[in-house]
Amino acid sequence: MKKGSDASLVKRLWPFAKPVKGLLALAACLMAAEDLLPFAGPHLLRRIVDALQAGMDLSRIHWMVILLFAAVAGGAASGFLRAVAIEYVSATIVHGLRSHLWRHVLSQGMAFFHKRPVGELMTRLNTDVDSVNRLLSEVVLDLTGSLLMIVFGTGYMLMVDWRLALCCLAFLPFMLLVTHIFRLQVRDNNRRVRQELASLNTSLQENLDGSALVRAFGLRDRRIRSFAFHNGTLRDTWFQNVSYFSYYFPSLNIMTELATAGLFFVGSSLFQSGTASLGTLAAFSWTMGMFFRPLRELSDRITNLQQSLAAAERVFQLSDEYTAIPSGPKLFPKAPEGRVEFRAVTFGYDPDHPVVKGADFTIEPGQTVALVGATGSGKSTLASLLCRFYDPQSGVVALEGIDLRELSGEERGKALGIVPQEPYLFPGSLCENVAMGREVSRERVRELLQAVRLGDLVDSLPDGMDTEVGERGARLSTGQRQLLSFARALCHDPAVLILDEATASIDAQSEQALQEVTREVLGKRSSLVIAHRLSTIRDAHLILVVSHGEIRERGTHEELMAAHGLYHRLWMLQSGAA
Image (cartoon, rainbow, N blue to C red; front, side, top):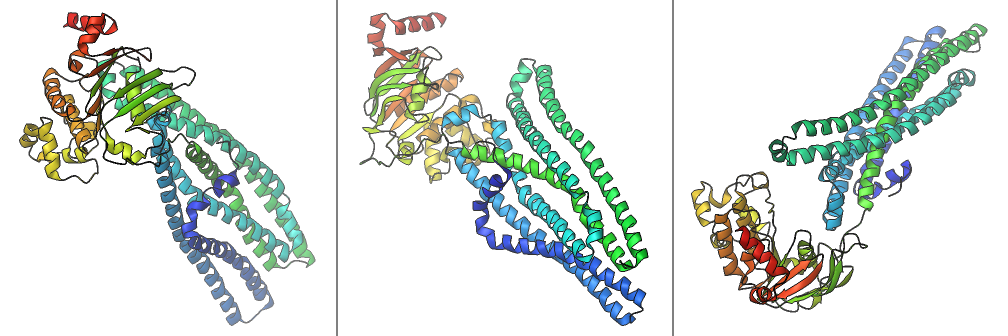
């Protein structure tokens, strides 16, 4: 998104304000009353002073004093009700905006998450959205209120005495010019503050996630220096605002004092000549305070406005970024059997540098196909294409003869189950991590846990299946997390199972348990197995050897060993290492 104007950013919030537009209109009316009623004060003060000079009856003066108190109380009540109304409006808008942004983020393709650090996304979803909340509740209406006070004050002073009004207003153009320059400078600086804050949060998130590695590799001092750099940059960027305030406030104060001096100089002359009453001077003295106070407060209002606008700009920049892979309309005509086809598939994260080149193979129902090859050869990318994390630049990936681009995402999700190399467990219980929000009976979950050799573990736990797994499954071993991930993949009985180096990082005992589960399960469904240890895929129906994105060899274990090619060399290397 290009840098938007202030008005365009505020305008984009309007769709989220529509549900409470009536309450917003009420808040605007209350704000007008809050800003207009205080001007009854100097007007009544003028009449009271002139009445006292003229010797008017005290009973009438007392009524004017009561009206003065009523005007002040009415302004205060309007302010209270306005604050309540606008807080509700702001909360509603931010709720809608955050929900929209969250749905938008979850709908994006994997390319979006690969180029966006988690810390940056967290900053935009939390800190930036909260700042947008202030855009209405603390900024727009407060800033509008300040401007209304200036407009009402100008009108009232001109109505009472244009000569005294000109003394007060003579410095207004200079004040507005200084304020405009200040606004532009603060806007640019606050945009940089938001960027540096996102970098700082990203650094925090990376260091916390990798805390074990930081300790293991003795990186503490280096990570402290890295954090200090980001923290210092944020501080220096924020301190840049100090230089702007250093000229803004003194400039306003000098012009305010000069205007006040001019008022009393001209006012005293007019009073002596009899062309201005004492009540008029008293009213102007009160009005000048009401007139210049919002001018001085404009700095804070504008600072908050620019912070909120910078945050809104980043929020809508994220909202305008679209990398979602659209779901197709087609459904399976019958229950899927597990037929998978790769037809001349070519794909690259950078289209100019493909990492999969002309992949062409078929997985028949109930067949196990294994992908082997060196790290970075393109094995996991083929699995990602089957999950439709990405779409190929050319060729077709089909399930049951239907191009994945034409197949409903819900249908694809039901047909596929995946066991990743590094399983991710959500905070919650064992049962919740297997069911993953799906309608699954506890009996079914227990059966799955028994099937993946976790039955004994569940029985040994005080809370059984309701035992909390901790953050990212920290209370379980790596092997137990992998077995639990296997149960999760089998929960909806998928037609195709994808094992992405599922045994690469687990101990021998867990690997044996997983291999037993794999042998029991793979014979019942189609499977795509990515293997680092060739011994685990020896019985596969078809083995594909991938090198530099191309399928160089294919066949059974016996056929590939007889060919004395890449597979044979890999097997011999692993056998020799063993």
